[in-house]
Image 1 (tube, rainbow, N blue to C red):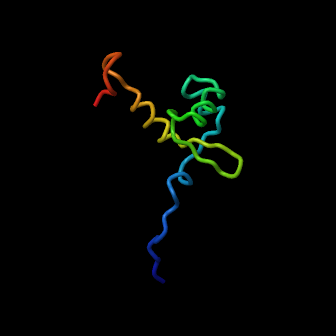
Image 2 (cartoon, one colour):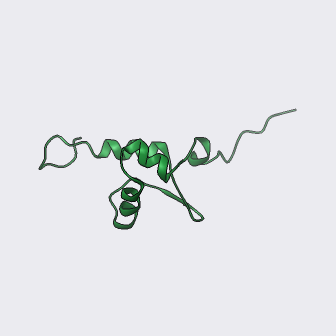
Length: 79
């Protein structure tokens, strides 16, 4: 019997735990309302919309945190 190689690996969102809005807000030390505002206005971390549920992938939160790093108050994000 031969094993078939996996031809369609599971998307990244299915391979690790997704966070709901409350958990993501707690991780970022912001209120859930702040995340809601960012989703409307832009500027926050990437999110998934699964039906009516909003979920955040931990990797997207980590990436967003890194993108917020600044070296001074007037310049762009630090490289």
